[in-house]
Image (cartoon, rainbow, N blue to C red):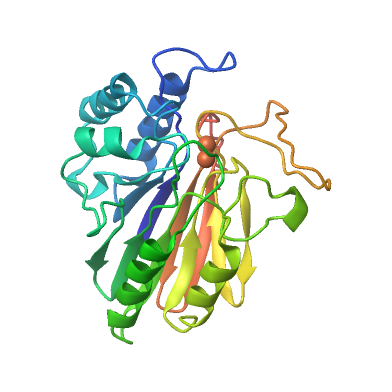
Length: 264
Ligand SMILES: [Fe+2]
Ligand SMILES: [Fe+2]
């Protein structure tokens, strides 16, 4: 199985910090169509738009329509801190929500369950996972049969990627979240997230995780003790996960580099 994981396109009707998010998102989609039309799932892990406004959501919908992705690659969406849940729901009425109206749902493919969760809280860039959402997630995890492998998609990083004190905008309910996923270690095979706009990968209590950079603006990892963000004109990317019965491999696609010299 092949999964495309793209994050943080930050669609907006104009350039943001001198970078055109629409142009880059379109280039990423073109790259996916050329190289990964055979993929089985395409997930976009939030910050779909920069301001969560109607115009940007409609522009996103237009771009997706224009690109004519294969049916299997209709993007699975979740929201990030830059999105607006109510506006999102108006523009994407077919995306499922839980009983409390959070953009959380799951889909089953083969022996796999893909769970998409909502870590947005209005007026803050930090991630939040309230008790109602925790309850829904716990219920879905408990209901999932032991024969199914679970893959979680979320916007915010569930753990500090360097130091707790510098993780100013990561998930706030880290302990609560940790408790839930650690008690389902056997079932959860990987966590896909975005938000920090940096390429990361590792293992959390034995559960592997990965994040791509934003397709709009890539950032630089922060190894200081303070919360800070930085750019260095690095490449944008999206990730490709290859899942086999005995392995999970994450590739990073630097989609702006399109000239390939294949060795003869
Ligand atoms: Fe973002
Ligand atoms: Fe974000």
